[in-house]
Length: 305
Length: 315
Image (cartoon, rainbow over all chains, first blue to last red; front, side, top):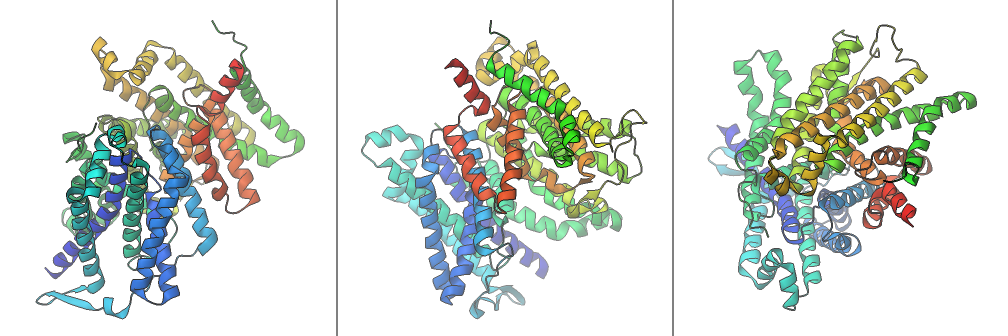
């Protein structure tokens, strides 16, 4: 029972983290029609910036805020220098150009920070276990991730659905010529949206950093998960990304935790220990295949032009 | 009717002649490195050529093509590890496994279009990668060493560098010939028609997805052959072969050379891998140069090298 609660919370926490990454990806795709593979690189940069700034400032919160600002800035620079010129081009061009950016970022990080990973140590007040239910303890840091990510998700909803900026964003997504003709600076809006997406990716990266190590290529595996999520949720839909992210986070975490035991019940233990790792990493792709067969446009297809 | 002696055909003929004469050059100068490098290049060219069939002619932007490299390679590696060394068994199994995988993921992925298709093929290839990493009996993450190359009962000796090179080159030229025949057949016309205007083709009465799926399976099978060659070339197969950056490499080769041209992907593979080799000798951080280079190629080099050649020829 204790294990179930813990794994359930782990799944929720992982899902929310994936949501932060997928939200930026789907926002950029929905509004600028840009496929950004380098989104995973921004996730990685967020983690590296955090490890560097926390070590430099000696304060966890200050370091993290600095890292968040740095990722936002990096995203804006990236958009202005490179990605802006890709709007309106073929999706294939996006894939190739941002693939080039991934190669660049990976080797750049290797050059600057070296090939070995970094660690992002937690401050003492975040390492204590918190009692969530009678007799059930859960690490404070993972709980903090859940709270922060939920707050961000709520904020994202309010900004996109309830503010003037969000109105412009939605208008830009449905008809970019018209909003430009109405006198809105669409270039600035795009830069802002990209910066926001970058900051979300960076936030996901730096929050994951204390749990895993900060290393080169950390953004790539999780980027593929983010792709799976936006395919399941429906590209361009933030609500879809949220539902799909929680679903994927849960299935992945619970699958890895309980599938080996489950298989041991129905197979011989040798066969189970061979099949379990492969099968549990396949689970979310099976989910994606099922969703695709049932609804090729994803669970919550966004209203596209 | 275009003259058969235009600039593009001349370049294609030069490539073929150059590749055919390469072992002679290597033996005359004693430069073995160039032969091993080009064996690798020819194998990747075969993979790129097969990707070009679906990407260039079929308009299906698959981002998971490296999966077949791995499947073809693992078929050879696993059979070798289980004591079945005959190439007459290994290679057909490699092709059949690739075809089957292409059939299943093609049937699922082709329900979608555009960017969904890119991401789904990517995700399925990544799934294959994780499955291979989980095969603890066959090395898991560390990969599988192949102690003996495929045995063709004295017909051809794969351990001889020159013979193996010519086998790879033969496969490449055979693959290009096959694609040439396909592209100019009725079937190929339908697939290309689907790329230009799917609605119109369906209105005439062609079942779009069935044609696409057959094309997808042919390309996957051909890439599986490249995988079998690759495993024999390196005497080793690991999940890294099907990591998604490999699929990206293959896409870059196709685009770089010229999508939808018969010899473009071959030229792309040569330029990309030679460039990679050259840059990695100049600096350990070669991707810092290669990455922005790709960005520039996408921004300014539309149509790849063969497209550029076409523009030059027209003046």
